[in-house]
Image 1 (cartoon, helix red, strand yellow):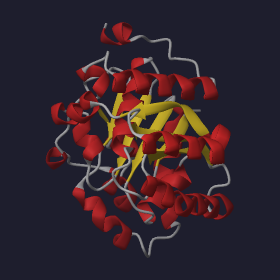
Image 2 (cartoon, helix red, strand yellow):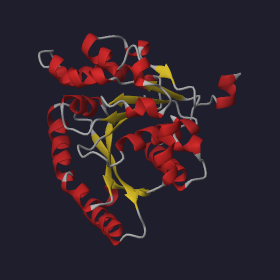
Image 3 (cartoon, helix red, strand yellow):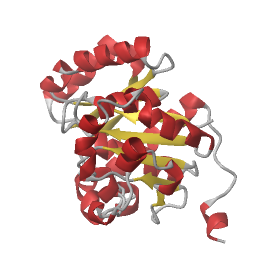
Image 4 (cartoon, helix red, strand yellow):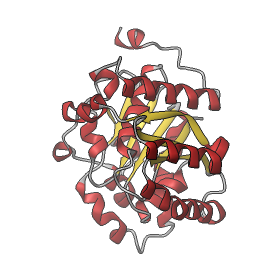
Length: 268
């Protein structure tokens, strides 16, 4: 069974989508079968791997609201052999209203994704910057959650709310849910504040904080404009190497073996 990992934080601009895209791409580059699920109406993860959201016929919206089979929505990314995408669309904005009267509305994403866990080593869910019904769905579907935290003071303030939401979901909707780790992002070694935030997080959360820290990096910022992950934009950049290290850290923690098929075998 594959591991379903949600990337969530109700605060915007902390690196959720950047982390989702580049972690999924790094896992795929390490030969792990990976599905990137775009659960954000902005559809940035969809465009970040080369798809124009306007061209998407069926998205996670149709899967959750209309009950379309998840297999009919998944598309290959065509940039990495082991990386597939479940795309999003702006229609997802209306899903929360349309799902209000549906039975088990918090479990629609779980119903779609859990059967796919046997086909992938990792499923990475990019959540929207809110604690609404779609994010609750993602946390209910997930086995664990990665919490990106920007290395700035205000980023720490919203962390308590998210942790409380996770506790509620653990007690009521998903007893399996664990915190995969807290990921420090946008780290600038020159700034005293960045170093203070790192110290605070490591002191308060100890083992929950990943060893890997994601730095501010120009190549990380550039790669979405090309519709590719940073590993394909500049494999030697600090951003690319950091996400590869994060992928290795997660693989080691979960003791997952890579698929025997290499990228070359698949092309043949």
